[in-house]
Amino acid sequence: MNCFSCFYFHEKKRTPKDSDNNSRRRNGKVTGRDNNKTHPEIPTKTEVEKNKNNDAEKEISNNIAAQTFTFRELATATKNFRQECLIGEGGFGRVYKGRDVKWAGCSWIVAVKQLDRNGLQGNKEFIVEVLMLSLLHHKHLVNLIGYCADGDQRLLVYEYMSRGSLEDHLLDLTPDQVPLDWDTRIRIALGAAMGLEYLHDKADPPVIYRDLKAANILLDSDFNAKLSDFGLAKLGPVGDKQHVSSRVMGTYGYCAPEYQRTGQLTIKSDVYSFGVVLLELITGRRVIDTTRPKDEQNLVTWAQPVFKEPSRFPELADPSLEGVFPEKALNQAVAVTAMCLQEEATVRPLMSDVVTALGFLGTAPGGSISVPHYDDVPPPQQTAEPSRAL
Image (cartoon, rainbow, N blue to C red; front, side, top):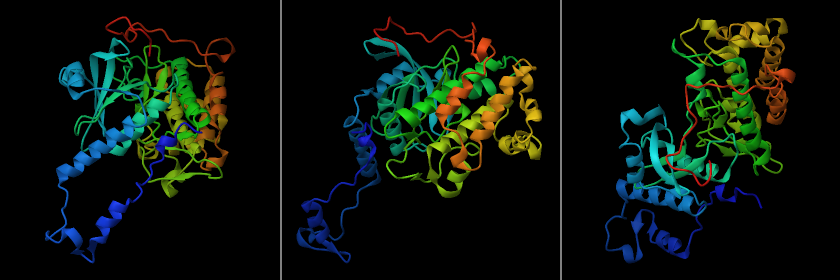
């Protein structure tokens, strides 16, 4: 029995009572004991919202044992969601740093994602994210501590990742920021690749992440990468199926071309997205950057001619690296990127093959990747001695 049976949403079977009610309403007329009403009762917007909220809570509570928090608890932890606690925001809502959140018998520093009620992530995505992160556990997936579904509030509580996202350290750096060195970039790429490998090869059925991008790769104090934001994740094909069909969602520039054209998803769609992130790591450029000359605005299109000429691979290196990288490792990284970005999905590599290749692209002897040491950001801290680590 696979561990994701709860993800298959079934339509409620029609009960005799339902059939009864339907039989009283035919051709726009009300029959039976509804005769004393001139019109069928129409639920108000408030009632509809209330039903949605109840459905969300039931769907989660019936399937997982994740900790639930009250809105008041999380408001207290984030100083009533003050600006000083804000650590990120996007189309889904805002992320705040919270303190003294009780979990597993201890007080923790956490990240609290408050979903925008009018944003891009709705009830379905909220449920999917809670279920996914409650059932999937890996060192390169962000840990979900709990959630809040009070009334129309939707909040997710994660472990706090002290370095923020990859986007914060790679793209649009401020003059006072130190660029990532080669080993740190490969370390991040390897961590993200291992997270995808787990989703594709170890989860049963496989999970298609569908939203890999620099903003969704979070970093701890040692630049270990963890995948976050699972609201768009989909269960992959099982049995004889080659793909799953879905409405096209994700971030422009990162989506695989065949998925954009047909809405057909496979694990190779994630491989393409990973290729885009790896190219961003190599070049230090955004996948879509309208501030650049027209022929350089789309990173993949700009790099494609270089992929065909190995002698030009060093041209892709981020200038901020200042030439401090093993040229052989750079060439191999570009080659892996080119394979991931193949137009034809079937010829892209598996993430397990990508993980193997990236493990030898560091600067240490034998191509191993050294652990970066920085003293500007302390490791994540708990406000009390934990009984168990995240």
